[in-house]
Structures are given as C-alpha cells and as structure tokens.
Length: 498
Image (cartoon, rainbow, N blue to C red; front, side, top):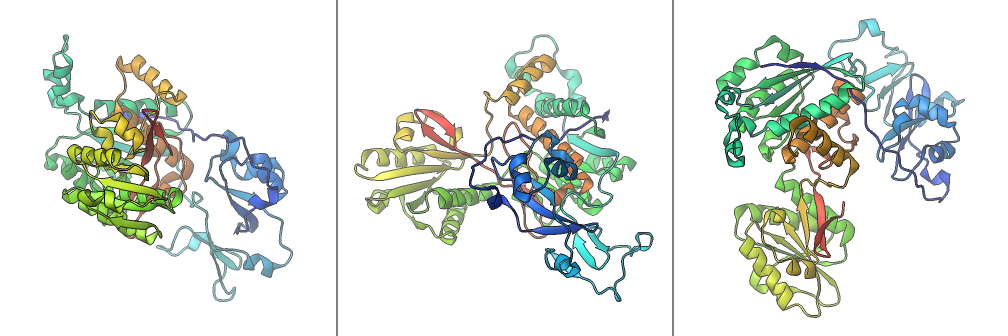
C-alpha cells in the first residue's frame, strides 16, 4: 500500500533574549571564509546571544546579517552557524592568509574552473574561484536543494491482519494483542508532523510502505522503480528487514533512519545509516563526560553486578573516566563502604539491571555512611525499576540516565496531545512522540540543507518533543545519536538536569 502526500516544511527555531554584558567584542569570531569573492566571519551562536549584540560585535547592520542568513528571520538558535559580512580586504594577499581551511592554487597550473567542463567525480563541494579553492560551509553544497523531495516510510503495519480486527468494543487487552496496532502510533505521530509541515510550504512526496516480515517481500519492494529516486528512507523495521534495506541504501547512497533499534551493529560499515536510539555504549560515554564537567574533583567509585552487559559498560566508563583525568576506582559490593573517602564527595556509579543488587547497594549507603558525602549514579535504565524506595534515592542524591523523556507541561507537548486526541481519539504514547520527532527533525533537515543534510548533522539543532539528537560518526560507520537525559531525585520527584 502506498500513499503519496505533498507536504510543506518550516525550520523551527527559537529566539534567545538574554546576553551577558561583558562587551560585544568578546563574542567576535576570528574565523573568516571567502565565498564568491566576498569575505565572511563565521560566527557560532552562543546561548543568550541576540541579533543586536552580534551585529554590534562585528559592526554591521542587523539587516545585512539577516540578508546573508535569511533563516534567522524566525529566530536565533544556540550552536547555529552564521556568516557575517566582513570588510573587503584591500590587499589580495591578506585575503588568502585568513581563509581557513584554504588551498592556494597557482593560477598558471590551475585556472578557474569552467562550470561547463568540470571533471566527473570531483568533490562537488570543493569550488575554485579566481586563485583560490575553498570548501563551502555546511548546507551550501551546490545542487543539494530540490523543488520536491522523495521520502519513503517503511513499517510493519500488518495490513493483512486488519480484516480480522473486532471493530465492536474490544477490551484494552484485545487491542494490544492485534499486530496492526503495535506500531500504529509511530505512524500517527509521523503524520501529525507531516500535516504541520504541509502547511508551511516544502513539496514532498511521501511513500508509505507496509512491509511483510518475509525478507523476500522486502527485497522485491526495493526493485520498485521509484525506490532509486528516494532522498531519505525511514525504516521502522525488524532487524533482518532493516539490514536488507540498509544494505541497498548504502549501495544507492540514500540515507536511512533507524528510529527505535539499540543495535550498534546497524551503523557498522554503513555510513548511510542514522540511528536514533542511543546504545548503552554511548550512555557510558555521556556519563563520563558529565562527571568530568560536574564532579571533576570527586572520588569516583565504580561498582557493577554480574551481567556481561554491565561489565562491558563498567569497563568503558572506567576507561573514559581515566582518560578525562578523574579519580576513579572499581570496587566490589562488599568492599564499597571501606573505599569511601571522608572530606570529599564520593560519586558512586552503580552499573546493574538487577533491582535486588541495586537495592542492596542503596541499603548499604543509607545504613553505613554517616559522615560521608556521596552521590549515586544509576544505569542502565533504572527508570524501569518498579517499587524503588524513594527515601533511599533521596538520601543518595540518586541520578539516573535515560534516552528520552516527555515534559507534559511543555506547550508543544500539550499541543501534540490535543491534536492526537482530536484526530485519533486516544492519548499519545512514546511511539507517537518518536514518530513526530523523527518526521519533524529529518523533514526540517531536508528543508534546511537539502539532500546533503547528512554533512550537517553535527551542527543541526531542532527543538523536539521527547529528546535531543546529538549525532556522532566513526570513520566508515553510520551516525548514532549520543544524547541521554540526566535526572536527579530531589524532593521525591525526578528533575531533569540537561
């Protein structure tokens, strides 16, 4: 089954108002690029900076900044990169010396490129003009923007089973037993984002495919002629089906998004894969970085239970903490109290998925630690434990790390809940927020950067409902989101720290 929707898109940004008055000159960047013979300062927006302050720092009119960066008409965003018009250099040699990175090309050996006679296979983002060859800033790749984008959404909707659904008054248990309802909220959330984007203006052909679990069916689908014309694939699929589509996408150089899988193997050797769900490996990296930034002078004790997964994560956290210069040791559960230090904060990192083990550690810390200052970090997924003693968590100043979290007090979340109820007569669950966020992020990415949006994932920042995306890529592998949400138990409630 295929549905083609023509939709529109708007790049959602927020505008920060406050700026510390330490002097406008201090925010000025020294990095300069030349594009089509014009010089620009490359400025990265910091949290709290305003358009007025930026224009004053570079001594240019605000309208000149807007004309060069028309996307900021909707507001500035932290970590956004702006091109600020710079004074024209009178000495050509001065112009060459400030371009970074730049390759000076001898004019006799390499004359300016004739665009009608370019050599096939050359790097499309390396542009030669006059005496200089330079790299275009992210998002300015030639020919990456299109009038209409083609996107495929592939899901297991189990349409053949839908005829057997009792449409009378099924119980909640019966509803949950129907395969056709397993992932439907992802699809519904996705369509709500599509509807919002349609009203904004970007033309998009959205192809929705319901895949059978049979790998042969998946391989046959990929032979459809329109598949080779896709600019993006969203693969909400079982792993073996995803692997087939991802391999095909790699061969055809089409980005493919994996929305919910935690498998690190999906990105290995395939630079086309973009994995949304962060792996437990990245959770360990995130925690070590958090400790280095917020508890650098603490005494860190690492304790784990017997699971193999916990051992792997604990070993990685230990190595990362050492690399970041932290005072870290590994201890056994029975020796924990003896290894605490007085007169300094003790950070106790407990790596376990076993609730009895976790409760035992917390019980020790609550009973035997008078005179010690300590803070507990629990992972992975302590938020899934039921019946945890909140008094223990409160005294331990317990922190937990989770991949996503929905703030139901946020106005945008409230809006989605309202729309979901109006359209589908039920409340949105996690899959609905995931579907909405995936559509909102990647369709906006197409709008902002075109088909070269994967080159810009490191700097792309878009407000989402459930979490943030912070993508990282290893050489030869795909992209993986490394963002985790950090929470602390305080006054018997979980409070976000990010």
